[in-house]
Amino acid sequence: MYSVSAFGSMIADEVRMSAYVQALEKHVTPDSVVLDIGTGTGFFALLACRFGARKVYAIEPNEAIQVARELAAANGYADRIEFIEDLSTRVTLPEKADVILADLRGVLPLYDHNLPTMLDARARLLAPGGVMIPQRDSLWVALVSAPDVYEPYVKPWEEQSYGFNTQAARRIVINSWGAGRAKPEQLLTSPQLWTEIDYTNTTDANAQGELTWTMHQAGIAHGLCVWFDTVLTDGIGFSNAPGGGAKVYGSAFFPLNKPTDLELEDCVTVQLRADLVGDDYIWSWNTLVKGVDGTIKSEFKQSTFFSAAISPKQLRKQADNYVPHLNEAGLMDQFILSLMSGDKTHGEIARLTCEQYPRRFQNWRAALTHVAKLATQYSD
Image 1 (cartoon, rainbow, N blue to C red):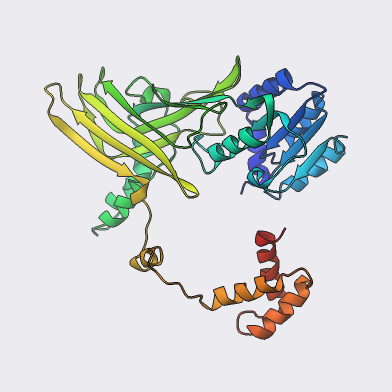
Image 2: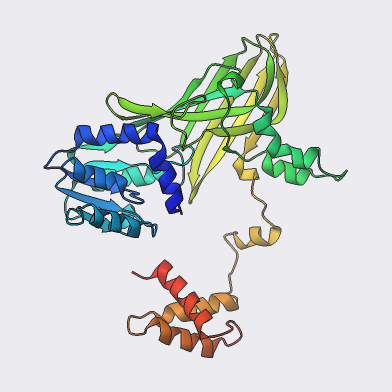
């Protein structure tokens, strides 16, 4: 969940904000119904009202939505904005939206449930002829020589290992990726387009593609730098490419298994894919380096599938033939949820829970806090 400060950093990014402001101003009219998904502190909803929207539906599961309500009231727009504290995929609106605006990306657009959320909104909540903002994201990839970005992954498990064999830990971190803004001068290759996400007609939440470079300069490759350009609407957009553009997103860095010496005319092929599995993406990046004579110089197969530290005990619990039995904590939560039938207050449930599980809580107020937490997660 984003903090109010994090939402503030998004607003402070002038490159991002100015593009979204222009896109809203272009498409919002006095007759418009606007849907703002992931409204956060409500700035886009306020802007839609300023540009004349008849009605704005602002959806946000984060408690920051309360700040948005207060800002709407303070600026005289409370009567035109309906705030909905939920996920858009669980919401049905009384009318279709003429404009749907959302910025649900992380470092990259292939993040969490950004795409499934956008596809659902387009299918269920957008009026015929309506506008999606953004319209398209293009993802770019380049090989980079960036030891300053690479070293935090491996240095603790190589140079500072105190003589211990730390390969088990290195294997996990080298199959991970994260935010890492390379400098323009660190690019060893020209950027290549990996994939495009067209929010107006795509139906696939996954992405895959192959990239090939013939080296025109020698250098040491440490990984892949991945970023995106966006078209919010025709003629309006921004980039978070190395060296400029929107800062709030950063760019992504996928480390190579080992720093790799590349010579002139070497051929580098990268197969990059992202597959949405459950609540997150599994990323895979396979790298093949061939010399000018066709001999294989390096080959790496990496995936975030190998980046999780999972014990055999936890693996057994994920097997299809595992028979689960609730532990005491599970039984207690089951007991609490069974009491949430609509006729008992939090206080009553907390007291009954203390009686049933006296060793779990120091006092009634501790039980009340736990009951409220479960109610926040599971109650309407």
